[in-house]
Amino acid sequence: MHEYAIANDIIQTAKKNAGDKNKIKAIVVEVGDLGHLPAEELEHALKGLVKWDIKILKKPGLVRCDCGYEGEPKILEKAHSYTRFNCPKCGKELSENNIIDGDKIILKEVIID
Image (cartoon, rainbow, N blue to C red; front, side):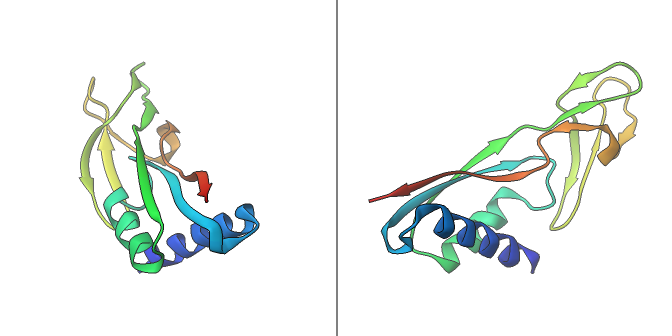
């Protein structure tokens, strides 16, 4: 259940950045499509730990393939701790080495009262 560990790290970072943890109203978190955790699982974990409004921004993945393609991959399977994806141009299955962007989870904003 590493989604709760990730959610807890985000919560602790938000509290640290807010100064007064009791005044946090909402947070905005960007979740990359190629990250190790589906956005829905992270949102569920966060909502289970705090009463803040949670806004999840999904960020598309960006990959580069040996065939010359650069853009969004075709996601074949998205599970709890992995994502399988391939090149939509040539069909080659890609790895983390092909990722340019969209594989991170980032706390974008802390909204306080």
